[in-house]
Every structure is written in structure tokens, then in C-alpha cells.
Image (cartoon, rainbow, N blue to C red; front, side):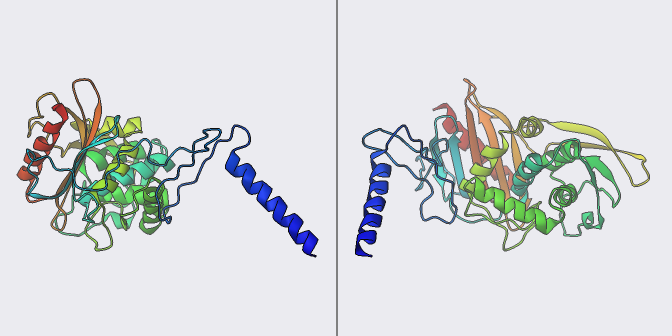
Length: 325
């Protein structure tokens, strides 16, 4: 028995030595684990120099506030500016504070829909599109109305229609609750672990929250889809969908983004490609944007909980001014 135990110990020791000395040209890969106490892993083999890619190697990472003195963000709860290609954080204020996202939620709704749906899918409205919350943005679809996912995404991202968000959620997830589960799974997959979602539109719920950094992660993933970027860049959209009897219903929407509808002038030497707005009483005024400098390099900026819409855009313009420096 003692001899057998010694043999087993020798075999185990040999196996450990083989792993640590890196026999052969080995590539190490670790699955991302949102429950781990660390968010990325790296192993360097001192003999063979084999390296495992870190989870955040292509992301901007921030651990503390970065607030240049010439940028005044006192009228917003959280703000951030990310140089996407260079992985650099140009500004960061309270990026890990949990706040209501309002309709910025719809970025994740679109992301999940694009990942699991097809733009040609036909969506049919249920009774749940009858949203009665005061101030909720609605495009007026009725139970039985139908449209393609492509049409729904345009109306969702440009006009921020909450009733269309429900249509998308029920089509992709089977129910609003089922879709919310998918939203949280996708958020965790991309590292947005400080947020929680219970609906596809962002109407106020104490259990529904996001951080500015998580919003960057979600938006950064969404802009990888060409259709998403195409939609958020549009100033207006006209289309025809159908009611339960097959009759045509026309709809025309304009972007809620002030940079695209000429309400607000873009900062000098910066081109705002597009983004998503969000407003509720609890969330106040929110905005996430994709912008480019004169060289075409992309930047993502986020502001959560500004005191007013005028202040939101004034502060965002000031924040984007850091791009050209």
C-alpha cells in the first residue's frame, strides 16, 4: 500500500512539473468567470514564454477616477470617455456607481436581438404592448400588429419606443422575463457584472441598474454589429408595418439624439456617429455615444444622470472636447 501511494505521488509530481515547465508549444485559455475574484488571468511560462490572453486585453480598463481639471462634470452623476482602439481612458467619474439607465437599456436589448434573432424575423405585438406608465415613449403599436425585427430595431434605437421593446423581448425571449434573463447572461458574458436588467426598455425598477463602465462594455459590443451602427447614425426613418387584418400602417420617426437632429452642434474636429438617449424621472438624462476624431479613430462616451437635457448635451460636448487634445 505504501509503495502504491509513493508511485501515485511520483506520477502527480511529474504531471505538475510538466505543466509548470511548459513541455511543447502550449497555448493557455481560460473561460471568463463572472463569479471569480479576479476578472482576467495570465500565465507566463518562464522557459517557453507561452502566454494566455487576458480577458480585458482589447478593452479600456479603469480602477479610479480620472478627471482633468479643465473638464467640469459637476452636474452629472457619472461620466466616462474611452479611446477604443488605444484602450485608453481619457475621463472617468464614478464609473462603477450603480444608476438607473432609462432607455440606454435598449442598447443591450438590441445587442441580444441581433445576436439571437434575424432582421427578417416577423414580430407580432401582444397585449403587453399596452404600457400605461406616465411619460413612457410609445410608437402606438396595437395587439396583433406585425413588423420585421429590422423595422423594430430602427424604431427601438431611434425613437426609443417602449412598446416595440416589448415586441422584441417576447419574440426573442418568449416573454419579458425570459428576455431579461438573456440580457443578464449577455451582460455577464462581456464583463458587465455590476449591472442588472429586469425589462427591455428601462422603465424604472429598483432592481434595474447599470454603471457607466458596464454601459461602455455593452455599447462597445453592440457597435460590432453593422446594422446597429447604421441605425444609430440615422436622423430619420420611414416604414410601413401591418395591423392584425393585414392593413398597412405608416410610421415616421426621428432620432432622439440632438447631435443628429441638428438641435446640438457637434464639437469641433469630432464626428458623432450616433448613440442612445435615455430619460426617466429616476434616471434623469443619460447618453452614450460613438464618435470619431479627424483620423477616424473611435471613442465611446457615457453620461448618466444629468440634471437636464440641456446640461446633458453641454456636458457631453465638453467631454468630447478631450478627444482633440
